[in-house]
Length: 224
Ligand SMILES: Nc1ncnc2c1ncn2[C@@H]1O[C@H](COP(=O)(O)OP(=O)(O)O)[C@@H](O)[C@H]1O
Ligand SMILES: [Mg+2]
Image 1 (tube, protein in one colour):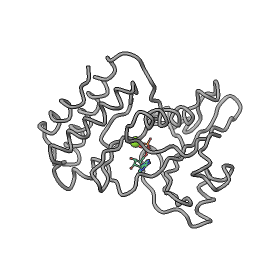
Image 2: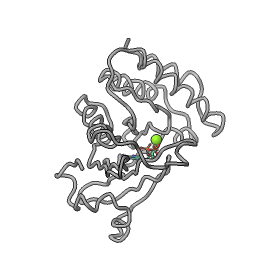
Image 3: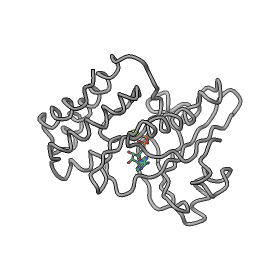
Image 4: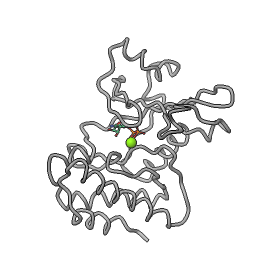
């Protein structure tokens, strides 16, 4: 377990157990991605608790088991560290609160609690309701650029993983399987993936989005 004592008053033994928070009536909401992310009321802030799950067909077979090799190579620890790295670099990402890995024979299970970004919605939800001002696309581009300046490769950069809060600040989330990498060639790949995500969601969810928004974003994001 790795955690920030200042933010976690509950025992670290219990804090990854959804049942524990349910009993205390401290579940304040939930969101779904690959699995369920539970929002919990901690003493001073709200947390987002996520159990690591696999996607795809392979995920149906082994669901949440990952092959163990070293504690500091576990998914939860890696994400915890990347979030710390990005916060130090001044990128808007959730504050990591606690991470856990539990060894089961040759495998492990993993969980993470981050600080819930208050009063934020993801880009899909926002664009289903209205258009975004050009200035906001520039801001998204700037946050991605800051992340890339910190050499973080976001391998799942899509519009579900970008949030905007009530003060119009842009947040990037979901750093599972991401890494700190030298060079630049992967940065273009992150951006291509994000563009595909805009296009795909625009088709299936009828977003208020067109290519001009993207052009503002990309002009600001490119740093190489
Ligand atoms: N720190 C956070 N603050 C606010 N919402 C969050 C936070 N972490 C996750 N969420 C919400 O939960 C959803 C799923 O979490 P995410 O980290 O993207 O995992 P995955 O996509 O692998 O399920 C996100 O799309 C977002 O809506
Ligand atoms: Mg996600």
